[in-house]
Length: 266
Image (cartoon, rainbow, N blue to C red; front, side):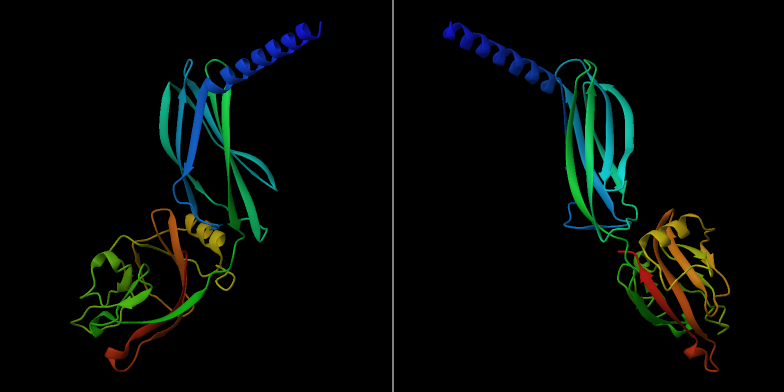
C-alpha cells in the first residue's frame, strides 16, 4: 500500500513538473541593459536590448512596466504577432522625490497559446538634484579668440581654430564694423529659448527638461542682455540653461564680452 502511494505521488510530481515546464517554454523574453550604471539621475536614459521568441505558436505581445514605491506604471505595450522579435527600448528617467529610488522594470511576453514569460531588472536612481553652475567670459567675434562656447568641452573656444562640431554658440558681431550686435548663433544646430521667468537658482534636471520642451525655440538669439536666462538644446532634448550676468559693451571694442553662468545637464 505504501509503495502504491509513493508511486502515485511520484507520478503526480512528474505531471506537475512537465506542465510547468511546458508553460515556461512556450515563450521567452530576455532584456539586457546596454548602458549599465551604478546610479542613474533624472533626465538620464536607460537603454534596453530586448529579445523574445516563441517555442509554440508566436509572440502575441510585449509589455514593459515600472514599479517603484510610488506605484505601478505601464510604460510600453505593443502587439507583435511574430515568432521572434528583437528591438531597442529607451526609457527616460523622470524626477523622483526620494534621495534614492529603486526603479524596477518588469518585461512580459504573451504567447499565442495563452501562456506568458516575464523577467525583471532593477536599477538605482538618485533623486532630482540641483545643477552645478560654472562661470565663463565670452568675447565678441572680432576679438578672434575665446568668442564661442563648447558644451561638450565645457569651455570657451576660438571659433576660427575649433571644429564647428564643437562650437555650440558664438557671438555673431560683424568684424568689419566692430559693432557689438549682441547676437548668438550656433555652428552645430543648437537651439535657444529665452525664458527669463525660469527659476535659475533652483534649476534641476526635470525643471530644465520640462521648461525647454515647452518653450519657443530659435536658431539664433537676438539682443542678448543682462539677466537673460537662456535654455539650450537640440531638437526636443535639453542640454542646459545659462544666465547672462553682464554684457560689457566697452569703449574699446576688443573688450566687448559676455559674462554668464552655465548649468549643463550631464
